[in-house]
Length: 179
Image 1 (tube, rainbow, N blue to C red):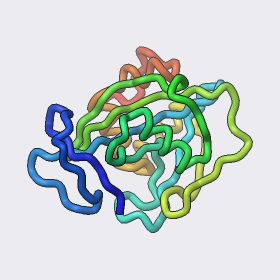
Image 2: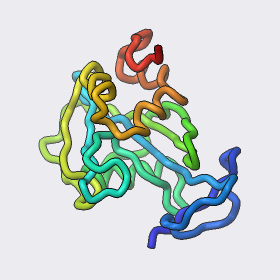
Image 3: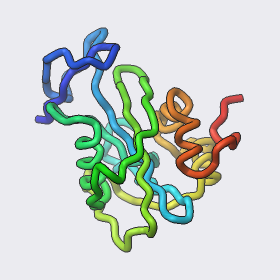
Image 4: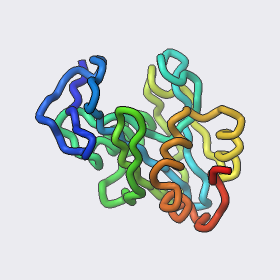
């Protein structure tokens, strides 16, 4: 059982914690976190969702997950990075990119810049089954081709696209722009 805190639409904790598998009621939200890991050459780390996942199996995404009960956003994303990739980083390395709200999820998103790619990643069985580094253009092509988890582009376009483009060194780019 994984306990999560329940939030209201303004992002305030309600004081209620329950099992993540329980359905959310109207006006209830979970706190989600995501991170874009970028190497010194501007390539982006993606992980592939395990085929056992009930939502978006086999799709590619940035490292992300839900905050567990009692976790703040930086703590949750550090845990997700460690669980899904095996990388251990510090809060000081995280760059806030912005928020996005979709459905019942309030999302906080970060960037993490690594000077060099790690030699080895440890993927979490049942969560991630593969990893690869892509250019921003390859990421956009994957979005067009339906290879990304549906929430990835939606979150970018719905909340923090400009900050993401600035972080990856593509400020002013037309990447991921609607229309």
